[in-house]
Length: 309
Image (cartoon, rainbow, N blue to C red; front, side, top):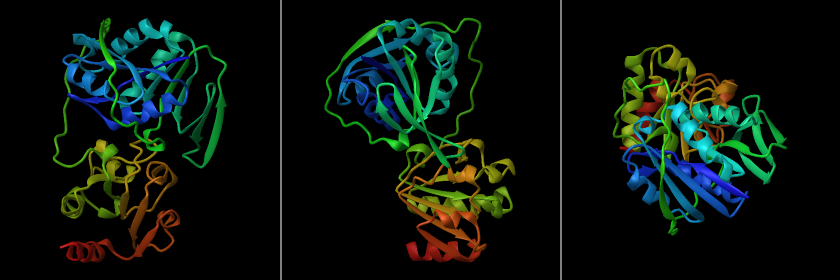
């Protein structure tokens, strides 16, 4: 059995979501290859070649692949699919975009958000916002799987895989127009060791920024938000943590003014230590918190900042 992992890269590096997906892939087979996609991705491919357990790295470069156009990625992967029994990707925004297309092109059912590999054809995934786990057994000849990175340890370094350049497909009628990138000196939300998140209780975008930014800077943390805070315009979309946002599992998660709807809990309840600050003692967030502070964040956060000073 051979497995292809589609790398999640950031410029010249591959994110640790790729390392964690390799860990899942190695539970299926010892023959694991990585596909690195994108114009000017040679350095990222060389970084991927150093991941322990990787047999070979395929480097696909073309203009259409520069921005991970789903049509171009799908055409490239489908062209390689004949050599592989399983195709894996981290369950990132990009992965959730192109993996269903790949599955449809191969006429197989995609298996999403896998948190455990039981055997070569059996997997565990969360359903109902993480309130239940479903064991899925697939009889498809090829498995197309997105992996929840927070459920797997990162594969180590020390590999010496060969990098092979292949032809990348184009995007057909789809073309890249533009993108607006958010630049920040803080850690990326999905990979941060510490996350501080704010909820609707903040009341305004100005208040959200005034409370969250100094605390995040003091802790070296990423900033997150509940969907309610994002929908209210207090925080940008890429801050959203939850079932319809990003799934995080940092060493420390601080929830400020977040009631704890199940959709939000689905995105952060695997955090190692959860601290909740909320003036409602009955807020659902306290059910998953390791430490709970019942009080107004306007009082508690300044006290916390003073203690950290």
